[in-house]
Length: 326
Picture 1 (cartoon, rainbow, N blue to C red):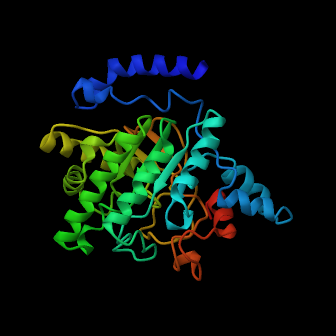
Picture 2 (picture 1 turned 180 degrees about the vertical axis):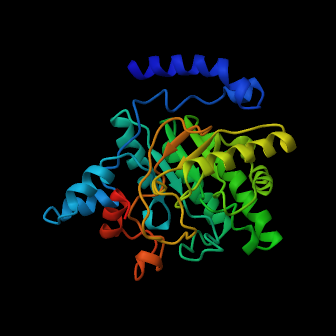
């Protein structure tokens, strides 16, 4: 009953505000429920890589700090080929969050040709058809339960490493992914990823977003797995919205990944040293929310202070230093 009341209140409030802020017709803007209003805060994953490491290493001098300052905080769960049966994996995760009346944040990371420019996180589904099957199962597994889903980080920043035919194919996959969530996960907010302030100019990124179907998404994300300060990202997000408004007649809310931006960027993107975890909130310089989308301490690949590791591997020493900023 509490959830129902929250939903009804949030939906009524959204009916008043969304037509004024989204740049969309009222019918489209109010079609989805509000997953934040349906839940009582964000879900903390008890099986995140830092949580698993801390539980397995209770005698390590770093374990308590990692458990209390990273593992105990809400962050996104990433899903890809490593997840196995994607329908079962997503349903289990979202079900656990729903049972706790918390909002899960999920990241879909399986598009063909993934990380085409960076290379450290390459892979993805073998074909567009395989990806459609995968993302459809992902959306269906969420069903009517509330969730936030980020669709394919880096996918709109990689265009310089793709042919025009590959870009067109990728845009088709992203538009279809958004359609799958609209059809099968009505209480999910979806976000396309718009890179970071140092990657693609705001006007170009607005073009990329619109080509990938951003009008159908709830919003876009910034700074995933990167280090740029919140203020820099806010300026970039606001500039993207300025371009979306001027060229396409709409704007979108945006979320900033603050998991590793507490000390800002030193210009390096792949496991730079001296970084720090950042703040989270539901406001921030124009952003809809500041969330941890990358898990602090997980490697970007065989580079920097993560030399010898693979992308996604949890590095306790990196995590520990990131808590204190050294």
